[in-house]
Length: 71
Image (cartoon, rainbow, N blue to C red; front, side, top):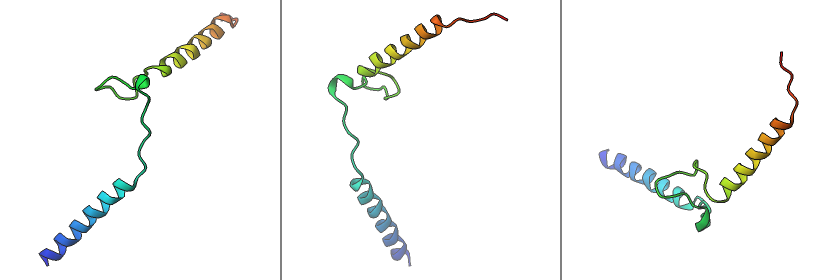
């Protein structure tokens, strides 16, 4: 009985390993757009910084250009 349980557990482990191997790989980022070691992708680097800076400045300019009425 114990051998059957161990066999089933081994088959489940093997199936999980094969399923992980069959998953498509995530695309690699270009070298100039990779985060420094130890930092995740949540920290903007490279082109992402330029895009976010440009978008932020455009939003700030729009906000500054709008006429606000004080209550």
